[in-house]
Length: 366
View (cartoon, rainbow, N blue to C red):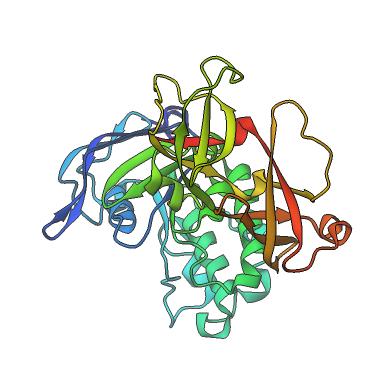
């Protein structure tokens, strides 16, 4: 089986069970098309690193199989899998120069020039790991994982050792490299931003069980359950109940309330779900889907809901303002505003405002 075929067929995990000691996962079934990145999102203890170690061959699979490009990898030793691995720590050999670290294994005969240029490594080749910053060492570790054109790239929390201010630049560099190299990649992280910006597909992993997987935007917009919603960084999770239908309510839609107060109306239940009066649901709304408006804003357009609120706090996060609000119905909400938007609103803590929300951006967890 040649490398071109490996790139065509992608990665197949068929009932893969992995584990460490007495702990083991649930069976995992996944297909990663060639050239795509799968971002697996989960907290500590989810089994993320153990899964990568099993794919790399450092841990034996407990059950199931690993296929890559039609090759059976399940029992192959690590050196025969053609896999690049970027560890959570850079794992560079401290007594070797940067160039010698890159020449290890597949890099012995590889053309390093494209990676040196893409990652700006040329000035550091004669230096040793201790002479570089954490961000620079991570760039070297990334180059070492990519050198020689592996058939599969594994990335374990690639930005965990990077200062927050340096992460956006390295994240963009990595995104560019993954697109240029077209190598199938499995990335594990606990940061929803990494998963959203780097993953073509996203999976939510919890205690060795895959809760959900699919195209990135679909997973982020429609989490499968409350646990997934929290891991995916949904800021607004509102407990509500279904109110009795009224004559004015459109057919097959529901009205949701909190504390006896109607809040959201004209909503369609999830496909295949029937909601009845007094049923309890969780409403999931991402902060970026709430648009802050002046309190005296005109009536909402068709398909848009208006929530009345009071500003309780605001802080700048990168290029956006995060607004903390108290809804009139007693719930709390978080929304984002662009700097120009924030200036135009001219709000102070305690001021009233409106939050516009499209019905299509409301997701019900039942």
